[in-house]
Length: 266
Length: 304
Image (tube, rainbow over all chains, first blue to last red):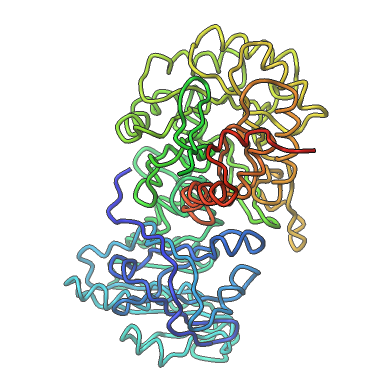
């Protein structure tokens, strides 16, 4: 196993914590060595080590949402016990971080990139543009961002501040931005790369549209994880080798979380 | 200075803390996070005769103070292990001992894997998995006295290396199974593998785990693991490797007092990869505080 990056395990202090939408929190951790390496699409395992031998027990995978100097930002939505504990962190608290982990989006020489985000799947796109610009990839980016309703929407001015993009917001009830599902906003005309992150049903719709149109597409998937580094073999995802047709499983933690759309057996 | 070394199977383990099978891959996955060579040893992910893709997702989920898994012995298979995994172990581990975990569905399966590995370099011996709850027939040999005796005899005939049998707790009297291993030529016992369990999503009314049931691990099972280890160690003279929910040096010490010569850390590695090295350090401190010069003095030192 030859990794491109060195995985860092460190107790990291919360530098800032703010509630940004319903059940949704923006946390910034001092995590110098992780920040120096993390790329959009990658994730960190966030847990409480020896403070967490009870419940919640396992660390939770969270997509890196920002790299600001020596800090990384995470977008946490409280769904269950594990994420509620993360969402309750305050400045001065610390958590055990392991990362950066997994694959990243590969922009290549794409000139027009469509990003489709559902819910906290917004995370990787909050720093994609700046990350790409720093590496001389200057493609034009359009960002579609969907939520159930206005209360769940991450503050649009904060999105602008973080990523320098104006997100096109979709809510299912029309309470903010466009009414409908975010996938209804997809227009692949002239697009030469689609990137998506969000709930699996959304990813499936994005994948279908991109494959039909023959536009390269990369999806960041979500799975239950324990280790994050390929040892527990728990985060299996159904895949197919596009060249040979051979079916199998890849691991979301080390082969993903970002997969080419044609590799997923959905 | 506390001496944590344990002499087991005729070799020295620099300390009693091993990484458990199925939680450390083939060692190199953790190599840039911890110094695996500082540990007592590692037990590889199970190796089967042919590669296995494993069970359908969802394979794991959190449970109270632990987790449930049903991986299905996903592994690269004997040939790829020899070609792609064993070289790393051989080249990078000089002080940590390596046990190769072996799984199969017939005596012939096990014999072929052990026979196919025995002339290779880079490992000490075998841990024979007769206790996987997540594949059909996975606990067959661990729960059938006649089949277990036959398997241990057959393996003894093909290898001189240390042969450790990993027992399942899912039998009425594990002592009987331990004794069968001893009588048929095993060198040691690992106690225990996971307990079968189930997790149900009450909204969908479906099992959370793709293959319906799984094995429970983590601190939730530690008291049962300690109990079973104590029963096994009381019954046989073979060295016992204690496994089940060990997260800290105190947990490891429970197993050692119950009779374990070595211990394995598994699920705790997912919570913090430093669990194993921290346990080594913690055992030093615990022994020092208690005025114990050699950890080996404490094996089975339980007073009842």
